[in-house]
Image 1 (cartoon, rainbow, N blue to C red):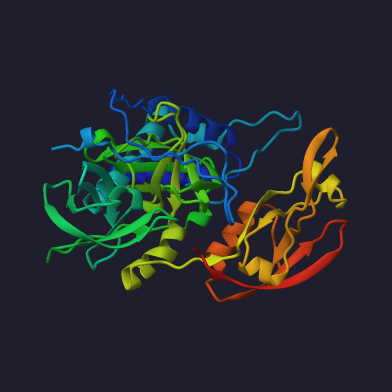
Image 2: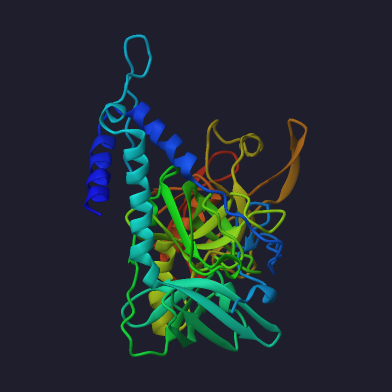
Length: 431
């Protein structure tokens, strides 16, 4: 163990140097070389088709995401932040790295393996398999211990319509559990385990610090194969996904290529420090099995929602009452807005909603710009309370993370023709 720790420490110290880009690239190559493909069986998951039309506050991709919860037949008995910069010689070539001179390939691989093994070993006792019985049969998924009060968190779609819930730990312990709160919009649910045993919670990270390229580790129960580890990277951040059959979207979602499959739902996505940065929730795949595009609910959303679910059984979101999309270049031309303008365009305002009461304008007519039909007449949101808004995802993220029902917020608006305005909106409760 001391050898592994020393190697990991040496690797970390060297990676933090500013003259290690070649070594950094070699580390990634070596990491890729030792990653194993995860074979899957022919079971097909029972998925919820996420195809509801966009509604208030929605900017979801037209692509379809599938929750990764098992079907009835499957129910079974950092680098965070600063990355080393490139150092070039006078000819523009990258210089030989200190890392390559300091550690052998075997030492690098050994240190990498020790990090992954440590995260798995230290997290395993806090991850659970969730077995659900319903009137139509049953399903299974994953979850993890949230706190020292015996609360377990998982995806809402894992326990939807449950008549009975059981959680099982890797050491064979199994307990009945009660659903005490659900939030279909964020796809988060909280269970209370019936036991006097002390359960160990996982450490929670900061999903806002997740960056593409950092190590991502998933632990769960794909296809009923209990307590499986898969490893990859954070592929992207700031995605938006639909949850269940809801018309709203979850913002700031983490995309990963760590293999997640039916049964992984609700399990943790961890960084190299063993901190939870997300809750594995959906895959995007025509075959409904891993295709290297998985999505995790950001842990910062869970941090907002879970305490309310524990206290009140529900989480109330603020509601604006609009639907819309990003401002494109063509749309900006049609609205006669300055070149390079970014924002969230309001295409429709919900009747009797907060946006209508505040006088926000929706699209009113269709014109042709560069041969394309474009709807114009609506307002473009470019800021909220002084925070720049460059897309509909920015708008949804701000309202979700920074506001509650009843709050008054000031919208900075570009009207058609380029006139600016500020409009105060009293936010309602999401229906």
